[in-house]
Amino acid sequence: MTTKTDSLQCPVCGEPADPSHLGCEACGADLHAPASAAGHWLSSAAPETPCAECGSTNIDTHGYCGGCGKRQTRTSDRTELDLSAIGAATDFGKRHHYNQDAMAIGRYDDIITGVVCDGVSSSTFGELAALAAAEAGIAETLAALTDGQPVDQAALAAVTAAGQAASDAGVRHPDNPPSCTYVSAILDARGIHLTWIGDSRAYWVTPDRGYCLTVDDSHTGRLAAMGVPADDERYRTPYANALLAWLGSDAPKLEPNTRTVLPEQPGLLVVCSDGLSGYLESDDHLAQLIDETASCTRIASSLTDWARRCGGRDNISVIVARFPSTAQEVPSP
Image 1 (cartoon, rainbow, N blue to C red):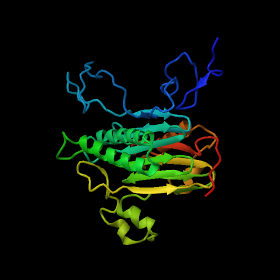
Image 2: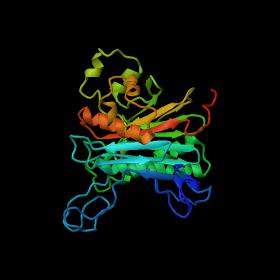
Image 3: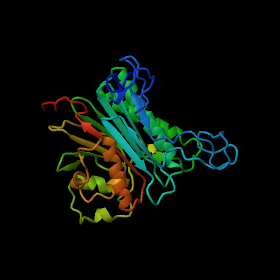
């Protein structure tokens, strides 16, 4: 009798697998794909189901039922994603009727990657832009890596594809098109490459410290990054927290922020929407909330639950990844 434990491992998530199966039971990856095949990714897209109101399966690309006209949400209200060295969780919170966040995680060889997009609630159907951008970003990242492009070029190609996808999602809503933020992370053997637009964030977390690695695209975020004291009156101007950059058909020229981090010790990368970061009292506060012995997905789910208990005033999305992602040692600087 063949058992999972003495057979092969999934090439994507590393879980033991039965060689008689075509796909991995844990993540769905092709167990027998050649080594040169493109990586595998998962997203928070809602599963395609019949209309909950009338049972029709005629659902258009914007989520409207062809039978009764009721709109179906394209993003999952609550779900978890697991690729072992990287995991994620999302929840629509307590005050929103559905989830306008979207996220995706992927893996190619020893490289892991993730994207969080937060649909802008003041736009029409922001979740359409968020889901389109997250899926386009992760797919383009893996395609570029498979083609042999360096990480920085893969990240640039990804955010460009995400911007186009978010723009395309607004074709039917020209007056107030859907828009979203974007933050991506690519972790390889050397370090972490971040790309972002908007106010979704990335944090580096060690056992007792947390560090925010991104700067919000807002006047408030940029003032804080420059070390301007908190009592400066510019923090209290009417539009101090308004986004200065986003993705969508009405977005300003694409000028993504980038940063490469070369950690000197093992740790965790946390990528999240402001549904989580909005409740953190400090960067170190994040480290205090994390049980580093838990799996990445368990940590992401725990942080999501914590944000709900804090009030859940916004949609919450969290990706957690380990660095290094494998048993290899942290590279020397």
